[in-house]
Image 1 (cartoon, rainbow, N blue to C red):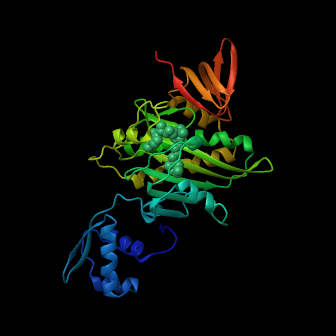
Image 2 (cartoon, rainbow, N blue to C red):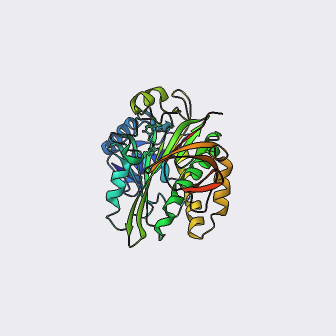
Length: 334
Ligand code: BT5
């Protein structure tokens, strides 16, 4: 595990190399400014290379960074992150069972409001209702721990603000405009590209803490995921933001997403959700469609006519309007 707050030699070396990208930095200079032996500098360079950084080393000259990594190392996200709360502490894993489980454990420690847990790969990634979430290398799998001073009824706002923040971040960094499928999916051309899971702990009818889990198919092979997902009931296609041979910086997307999410979180705190709701509806593929909703209490059919101020879907059927707080929906084919 690496974190953004235990200042490691790796973090310091990469910062130095980045600020001298057009020249070689001598081993001697590096060892002096970092207070490390030359051997330790060399060892750390090897480690950085194994983390995907392309570093040229020339005998008697020194080291030069040629290319950054595509791994979501914590310092790659925290460097330049423009948030006050979300992502101030980042925990990074190459492989973990589920970032969601780790974040839930973190909730027992003090000073973890806004902490982010991120992994390259999950072995037991989960979706809603304990469904399997396939999480191979190349995706962005992260969880955010928050302690909002909110009423329990405000929980349903979180899929809405998270999906909208992610859609905006994707649009800004990758110039792709995803659709929002109620309640928690982002799709591109109708196929699922990201999903959101909210775990909430309650105390005296208030939210004690909440973990937002976000799975983004950043650079994955969709047919491989479809094969592994094995969920014929809900399968409406899986896609990826970036193809395997295409360029794209996942750290930039994560930074932008954490920033957009914090903006919206602050708006919820100050009770200004009108604009969020309007923007969500604008990007939604659900509103206006005839849908079938599968809920824990059965099937509901109707026309999706909007979402209310709590994020609930409004379904109209034969003049009757029903409010839906959770469930899975399918669209009726036109
Ligand atoms: C979700 O559930 O969409 C929520 C996914 C949240 C995953 C994140 S990753 C970081 C954090 N740590 C975790 O352990 N989880 C969170 P749901 O709407 O229930 O969708 C689950 C269904 O999507 C599965 O039953 C499959 O059909 C399908 N699926 C599985 N893996 C997928 C993938 N990578 N991309 C698209 N669809 C997938």
